[in-house]
Length: 298
Ligand SMILES: Nc1nc2c(ncn2[C@@H]2O[C@H](COP(=O)(O)OP(=O)(O)OP(=O)(O)O)[C@@H](O)[C@H]2O)c(=O)[nH]1
Ligand SMILES: [Mg+2]
Image (cartoon, rainbow, N blue to C red):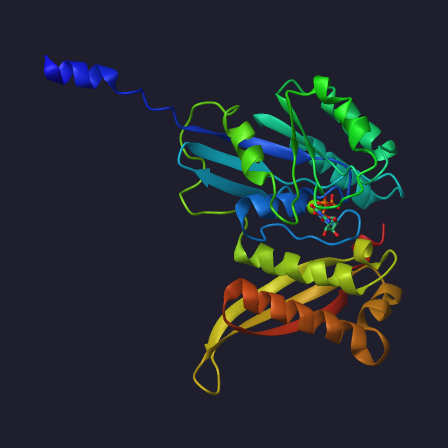
């Protein structure tokens, strides 16, 4: 009798929830920075240049009550028309399939421009719950905050965050988790992303290409990883040998990537080598070629 009473008074445990939340927004809004803050690791590359993200990278947030898998997407960008821009917009839209919640990431320091009209057109076709996420909360002047706040009634919730400092990210994770369906873990405990080490290494090199080259050069390049192999160094300490190539469509871009006296490619290589060392936690020797693939020149 006593036992039954005790048993009856115990609260029913909350169900485990899991699902996919896609981050969508204009380019440079801060989607990748936010995903990295949520996960607590650099799963997606970040640069100040538009259209940095090219692939829908997953960032996994594990909580005792569930799991939220964030899907990063290429940002919408209106400035120039190219095959790459079209592909990126296509990928962003495809990322909305099979997801549970949509997070519209906006930068309240910038005007709600044409690119946001493109995002709104995509969001209008979405039936899943929509969360408005205003980021860059660490910047004191956010002149477009009020304009976005007026749109709050058209969303299921509004959250303000800073991807840079992490403020508000815990709240965003909770708001999303409570909207996820009941279900098992989608990724094993501890796994932070869906990408391979080869992909991460190639992305890290691409990040440095974006940071060290100007104008349209980053948009006329891709990075291919040829091999990653660990060998004992002269002092017995293992060295990870990474061979990769920056691929570009013609000699003009090749020259720009190599730079006078090969200074540009050396800068890229050394910065990438440092990044790879941090990523792998081991000594890294990076060999980086710049090669031409004329098929890209279409
Ligand atoms: N101050 C501040 N800067 C931020 C914040 N989030 C992102 N940034 C900066 O904004 C720029 C763009 O950030 P990303 O995270 O690459 O933006 P994105 O939305 O992923 O951009 P795409 O991949 O091009 O669509 C970078 O220079 C970031 O450092 C933030 O919360 N505060
Ligand atoms: Mg990005």
